[in-house]
Length: 287
Image (tube, rainbow, N blue to C red; front, top):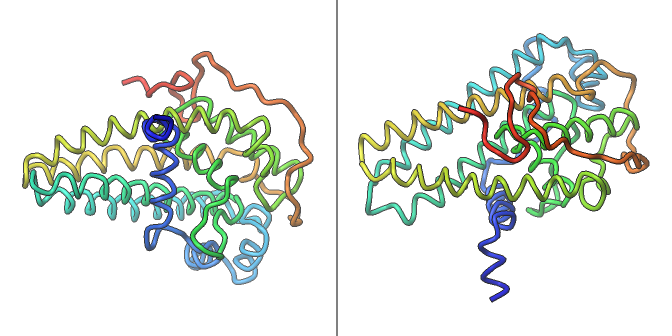
């Protein structure tokens, strides 16, 4: 009974989906390669090298260059995920049991791709290790918060800002592991994961319905994906570009932001999100 309940737990459901998507081929972005490619047309070799060795903020890369690279990446990933969703819709009713889980995992995979690209442009550290397929708990935590920002949860907005502030204050090049896995941020990670587990189940149902009509379903599926994915990516871009980590700073040293012991209390009342609209802490955005 306990095992069955655990499977139905929205938090566990989300983490299972996140980890499965992270193992899909092509999901993980190589930070150094991506930054070199994204900045190649606008920056000198010296600036690119410093952006890779430290951060784009430390290299003094202009905000307009980073924003253009971010918008280009959002367009690219949106086109890919929309085409993917439409293609997955083609088989129709007979393929529903097989395609819906795969489609959801691939969609989440594309969310992971754009989250990594935006994070690297706006001076977050490498999120994945080159060793094996495992995702460490700190990375799992920060990716959960990034997804929460994309879905418009106020507590995720506040927590991402807090993590960015910790790293900025400590001049850190690694995620604040203790805060994300056992400290003040951890309860927010768990709450956001539970909320996302419920939301993604609801969205999966909507996707299933749209796929029930073969050709029309494919067109609707691609359109809906475009309509949801792009605004979510834009929301994360705005939040990361406004964070402390994205501001021009001094040189970075490799330390972990573990020394910060400030308490963190997420706001529960409605307040404006980074894109200017009011959203309750764990509820969907107002329509």
